[in-house]
Image 1 (cartoon, rainbow, N blue to C red):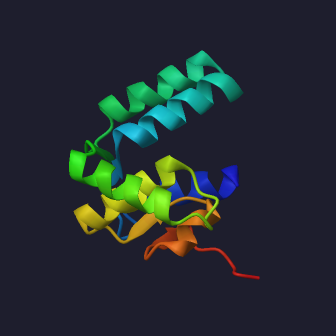
Image 2 (image 1 turned 90 degrees about the horizontal axis):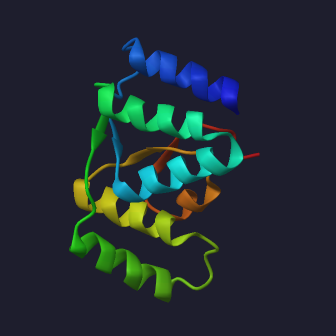
Length: 123
């Protein structure tokens, strides 16, 4: 889905879509940087971190204790959902920030009350 992601981000950067600032939190930054380091290279991970620091497109929002506790409760209670703890953190954080759209291809987010982008066919 790299081509779709690149096109989507180009549309966002150019102002062709109604999404202006992309919110990231400490858990997303941790997971993304670690995956880039292990699955691509340290150079890619460092580039990602530099982009977050320098770009006006991204907005960092730290996760509060209340969000962490809400995510922990959902993670323990929703035993039938094969989602990561980070997925629950993101969902609880989105709820706190009243954000209803997420840029992801992770189907676990279909369970939460959010809209996943880029849109994809449910076939």
